[in-house]
Length: 599
Image (cartoon, rainbow, N blue to C red; front, side, top):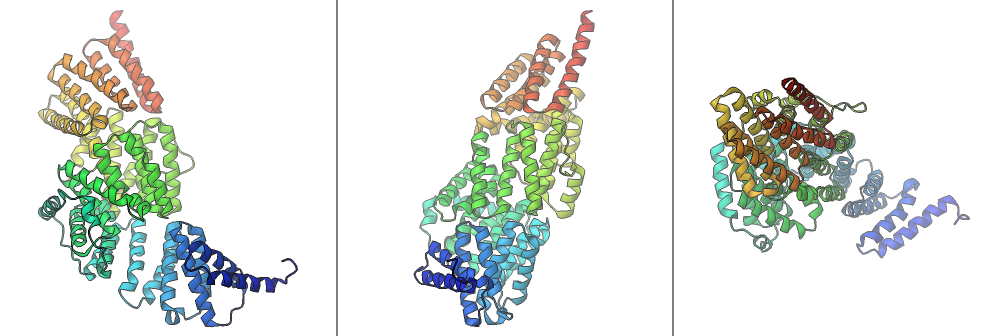
């Protein structure tokens, strides 16, 4: 080989590649091997024939398609670049179909790699040269994703709605009566549905309906962030189109969104969970299960499973979802899965130092891939961890709660606003600033739809309301505290593992408010035991703290100090050093008063 002149070597590689290509017969590995050989020639080769350039560009486009299917995205990038290099100057006129194919794949790979400038350039070329409306739809879908990644959710949803209208799917302005009507239709349609019903449906073949399902998929994802009331309308339309025109992968998205909508707007948790199980069955049998798993992580895992299954077992599934998203080349969903893991891990006692480090990594990844939606909510959750631990950051800048609120308002990002609200609630709660918790409640009344974090809100606010009722004697705080306790009791009936200890602690505080000290002490102890049994160590510490305060306020200082010292040690184990310092100061104050009383 070394004796062959360099120019002849390239010709030899091309001849080898062409020979292999003739025997590939559509086999991906053989086709890729052939194109790798041919590209050694193409890299610097002088190809005179326009037809030859076009043929070799087509070979590279096919190779890129195979590489994408195998999740080899960097390899696909090299084939796309070579294919585009082989295109002639007026390729949009002479090789339109091939040009469209290459530029669409280039934009898609650029999106996956976070190369926004390259993605925008490709999309501009496609939209400028597309000959038909349908030819522009793939580019329009990627453009919508680009808008959403830059927090332009109103523009993203508006574009989706306009395109859907052109595809014959018009959506009225959403309002609560309409939403409830659509939900009623969904509940009646899906009450006894099984995965078998969908497997018996023919495949959807109408090109317009397939595109409509694709854009409704996109719209439902961004509606979670900016227009939640649109979700029942979208999911109902997707289910009805599936039943009328046939089944496709986006049908599973529509079905999962239906279950999510039932959870958000009704109390029919049994139906929501049933729909979730049907979706999981359909996903497991889909060739695109990795993409579907990651796409529906929020709806199926982050919401429907967390409502009914032990939190720890649900969270254990997030690494698999993350890897599914990475295999599908979807960094957007991968980062969302990672944030969901971080958020859930906070509420199941993950060590705060470990969690803060994970969130720092997530912030850096979100910056790298220019995905603002995850970047901002990760910053909000990181802020909470830093407040509790007392840590500061030197390597990255993290917006404070006020700045994040301004961004959420400016971009109509209801998801960011809600998560930021819950994190502020969390911060005030853990430092026993119950007046601030109440002020936040009054500024942010419960919306017409629920979120899974509503469970956290009910718990934090319930404890705060019952303490304020004792401190102020105001009836409204008692009423709100009793309502929170009743809601948590109902949740504990659905999911004992995740919610029983919270319900018992609220009951203890309610018994204390009622003056039933014996029942209160029994409930405090039961809450501690339940939290320990179900591995919620930080809320076990909380139960010890509240029991300790109860004892001190009822003239059992020795017993109370003992519980507070246990809480102090557990907060330190959690990594909440600033919270631990707060408890330590309180112990010192009580101990000093206690000694003076004995002197």
